[in-house]
Length: 357
Image (cartoon, rainbow, N blue to C red; front, side, top):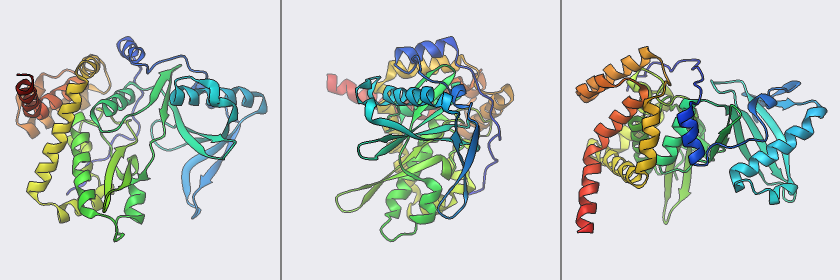
């Protein structure tokens, strides 16, 4: 498959408006934070972090003035308690901040916080980023429509995200894809389903280093789950193919694997399975998803030029004129989901009607 154009190198940040802020507060996503992104920007200097082979990881270990460190340390531990135990500080006494890393790559320039348990040296990570409406929409859509739940909170112009565990997609290609124990058919099936999830909700830029692969031992083999970890490109770009992971050159090994092990009928089956599952998730959270999509439809999270381009490309792709009526990226997302999922939602409603009868 041909490589698609690259996403925009620097996407602007979009503010969280009053409607979205109200939605986030209603669902426990917005609260008073003990520390902000700007607080962490006050580091005095940083040291590049290299991997085991000496390669630059694009992360830097930050160092702070001791006058600021006590405040930062306490705030970061309390912030960890907010995302892990809903603000129960009972267990924070034995926690410590082992490291604060800063990423120089990408749009969000996140901080990665390593929290360590002093009793057993077990550690966990979470991320602090600038608030961005498109990223928040991406996180919420992932939480509602995907098989994965996501913990994040906002406040003080700051976005806090939990760490999503898994093997980075590019690392999996390099170290695991060709292993004899890798079940290539199951992995190909999951890539088809992941590709479908991204396109239906218009999550872009899912190159191999922007998703992780979870491997779960099963009765006699392994199961796979591909999870997005970067939601910066939610409904921003104008090119349709940027919302289809199959078109990125970084994902070529997954595409080749899929074409080698799955025929056309199997691919269509797995696409239908994923659409059915998304329809079930929409039905289970129908009021929440409609609130979110209505707010998103009234928000501005891209440029008029990119919105017009995506309208035209999706209208051609689906051979449907309804996309020409969309006035925002949110409306395009809503229309895409409505068009793709309509027959699956209809069957779901029909079957539920039979059960109730």
